[in-house]
Length: 238
Image (cartoon, rainbow, N blue to C red; front, side):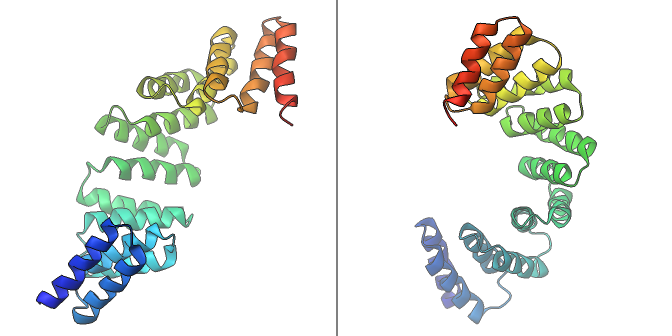
């Protein structure tokens, strides 16, 4: 009815204004008239999630999906809520349901990879991070997380490759430079590692771990005075 749509459209307008609490009330009014309005449950779920009300958001997405199981974004956002609740196995299942409906959802592949990491399945995470990168060759987070997983598996050479790709996408993220530095250090490529740690602290002068690794690498290179300076940079921040 026109009243149902008026409440629903009012809710949408309120969400766009950032007034999620009022929007939820509008969606509830929508559902009081038409309890089978799947999109109203979905939008209510989004608003609740923005308010970090995970349990209530999950219930809203479940209601939307019970009415329309083919709602791709409903499955995806249910996965996100479960991920934020650290229910990684269920989160992965939701992302897989979304991907069964649309296998071009790059972010669903990425979050599936994170779920696999949390579930201790590193090889599977590499496979799905690779799929995300295939869909978006400039996906910084996928390159970065894939690099971290490879390092965790002791595959430092491939880790350097993936982390270098991340840096090519965005050179201003200190974590990628630091992680690449650690992989290079593990490979005994101390000069290259030092360059990565130097870039890390250039981007973030408070990055204490990078100063420590600077010192370690400088000692390996026989540059003891410079190593002492690096360690002093850490101690000055304690």
